[in-house]
Amino acid sequence: MHALRSSQAYTVTAVHDHDCTVLICKGHLMKAYTEMFVPSEFGIYSDGAKRGLFKKKDDVKAHLRTLDLPYAALYIGVFPDLAFIPQATVLASVCFVFGTLFVCFSVDHNLLFGELSEKSVEDGFFFYTTFYNAPPVIKVCPVSRYPCLWDKTLLHSVVGAGVLGLIGKLHKWDESAMFFDGSSLVAYVFAIGVYLSVSIPALRTIVDPVVGVDTREDRIEAMRILSAGNIIIMGLLGVVLCFQGGEEYARRIEVKELAKWEESQKAKKESTSAPVSEDKKEQ
Image (cartoon, rainbow, N blue to C red; front, side, top):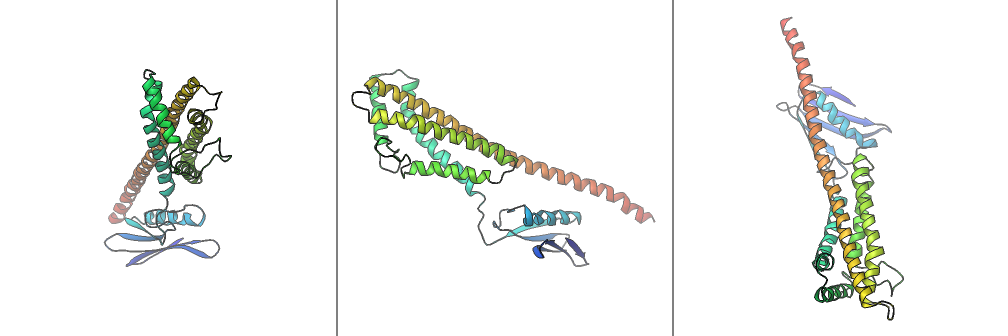
């Protein structure tokens, strides 16, 4: 990286190995203001990758700061900003399942926390039978009829999209991803495990009982177990949302602290350069 200084302009060029130019940034000195155009593979709203060749973008910005000139970094690229897609996928998936479970909670709270009356039992049987026999858009896969658990339904597709979104965020493998996204993935997979091991067998007992084996008391007990499993899943999904919110909060705090540190470094540099300039004037 080198800088050429003249009375009209500053030119900063960043060159990496393999004889290839990664960045060419030209900032014209107009009222002590520098504009930096940075090619970005992710579009105008993102810094893009910061490893390997792409780390030179940060090197260029750091070098411009040494010139004591304010600058604006304008990121240009042909691709749209895709950095938000994994985060949006996770939030959409969790909120979709949350909405489904909140609907179920209208029946579950009477079965678990209210008085177990004949009306609440019949309401539960009717609700979960309707849910089980719903169109393939939302229904769960009847394990007793199909050897494959994963029917092509909207519910299962959205749940799978959430797993892919968390894996996509975890792929960065930095400290934030390992703690927040890794913990979110563990809680999310645990929720899926509760769904597979508790919810589906209980639904099968409620809606399609084995003749001569599953009694009415067994169906009621299975329905209460299903209600408890739904609440556990809601709690785990709440943990996922808390971790995702904590990750965003930590990122914003980090940006603020970095800005404060840069301001303090700039103030120190100005305070040390001021006495030198005064000594030159006295000479």
